[in-house]
Image (cartoon, rainbow, N blue to C red; front, side, top):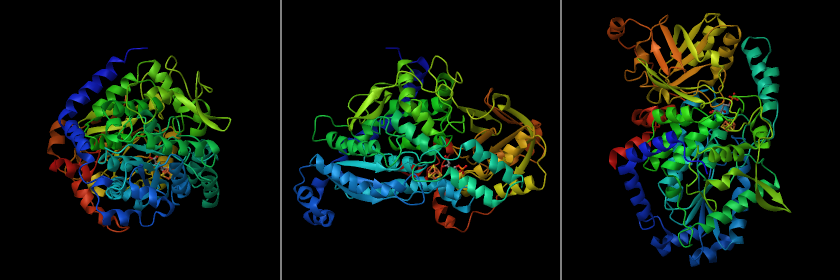
Length: 608
Ligand SMILES: O=C(O)[C@H](O)[C@@H](O)[C@H](O)[C@H](O)COP(=O)(O)O
Ligand code: SF4
C-alpha cells in the first residue's frame, strides 16, 4: 500500500487545523440532531397522524415507528433532461424500501434550474442562488422530522451542492445520493461546437443550428459533456456518497434500476438503530472534501466547484480555499480527457473504465484518502470497482486497466503531471483558470483589454468586427453581489472563432463560465468583484492585461501611480425582471466566490 502523498497529507492537516472549532460545533450539532426536534420520536400524535395520513399501505409500518422511514428529497422536473427520469423514482424507492421492511415518503421537492435552458438568458442570473434556494428547500423537506434516513435525487450543477448543503444540516441522518445517469451519446460534441462557430460567423442559420443542438441533447439523462453536473457525480463517488460507481450508468437500464434498489436497501442498513451507523455529517469530513478536490484535478472537473465545494464544506463546518485547490492541483496528475477536455464524452469515459479506474489508480498511488466513511460497506476501496449484473444480480468488478488510453490513463502515464485547475493572483485579485481544456501554448495571454459590463455587448462588438485582434475580453459587474454571478458560456463560440483566426484571446471576469466551457483561456470568479470596489473596476479599455496559468498571475500592466489614482466606474443598475429582483436579499448577503458565494451560509456563520 503506497503512503499518502505528502502534499495531500499537508493540505488535509491544514484544513483540519483551520476548521477545528467550526467542525467541533458541527459534530456537536449532529450529536444533538436526533434530540433537537428532528426525529420522529419527538413528534406528537397529531404531528404523526398528519405525517402518515396519506401513506396508504405503508401506514401501519410508519405508525408503529419500528422501521426506518426514509425521506426522499427530489429535484424532479421536465426541464432538466438529467432529472426527467426521477419522476418515477419515488414509487421504485417505496417498493425497494418495503423489501427490507422499511418505508419511504417524499419529504419534499426542490427547484432545479437547467443551465442549458437559461444559458445566455436573464434566468442565468438566478442560477447560482438557486443552489442556496435548493438548500433551503431541502431543510424544509427534512424539517418534517418523520425520517431516520434520507435519499437525495439530484444530479445537475447547483442541485447536488444545494441538496448536500441542506442535508448536512440534518447530518445525523444516513443519506445517499441517487443518480439517474447520462443520456446515450448523440451528435459528437466537436461537431456541435463546429456548427455553433459557423452560426456565430453567420455561415449557417437557426434551422441548421437547432438541428445540431437537438441531435446533441436528444433524450432523457444527463448531458454527456464533462461539465458541472457530471463533475458532481464524480465528486459524490470520491466522497463515497453514491452506491459505488453508480454515476454513469444510463437511465432505463436494468443495472440502473438495481443500483437505485441497492441504494434504498443500503440506507436502511446504516441507520442509528443498526450496528453500522453512517450519518452524512460523519461521511462528509475533511478527508472526503479533499478527495473531491483531488477528483476535480484528476479529471479536469468543472470550475464551478471552486465555488460549490467551499460552500458544501462550510455546511459541514469545514473551511477550504483556492490555495488548497492550487496545491492539490500541483500534486495530482490529469488522468482523464472527457469533452471539453478531450473528444470523448462521459459514456465513452465510463466504457473506458471511468470513475472506478480513476479512483483505483489514485488510491494505488497514495493520491486519495482511502480511509473515509462512505455509504458503502467499507472504505473508498469499494469505489475502485465497476458495477455489473451477474445472473441479473448486482456485483462489482475490478477495472485492471484503461480500455481507451486516448481518454483515460494510469498515474504512470498521465495527460498532464498536474491537475486541471489553477489559482491566478495579482493586482487584479484572485481567480481560477481551468487549463485541462486549453492548449498549453495559450496558458499565457498578454493583450490589450476590451471592457464590457454585459455579455451581449461583447457579442455585438464581435459581430461589428471590433474584436479582430489580440484581446483580453473583460466582462465585469458579473459577481454574486452585482447580478448573481451568471455563467458567460454564450461567449465561447465567438471567442473560439477569434482564437481560431489566430488571435491571442482570453476572457477575464468576476463572473463564471460553464463547466462545459473549453478551449479559450478564461480567468474567472475574479475576487473581489467589481461591485463594491474590486480592482477589476479600475481597468480601462486598452490597458495591457496578462493572465498566466504557468506563473499563476493575473495582472493589469499599468503604472503603479496611475493605478492608485484610478477611481471605480459607476455600477450598472441591479437586474429587475424575470424575478431577479426577488433575489436582491441573496445578492446583498452573498460573500466571496472563494468562500462559496453563499448568502445563507454567510448569514448562518454570522450567527453561530
Ligand atoms: O456548468 C455547466 O456544466 C453548465 O452550466 C451546463 O450545465 C450548461 O448546461 C451549459 O450551458 C451546457 O453547455 P451548452 O450551453 O454548450 O449546451
Ligand atoms: S447538464 Fe446542464 S444542460 Fe444538461 S440537464 Fe443538467 S443543467 Fe441542463
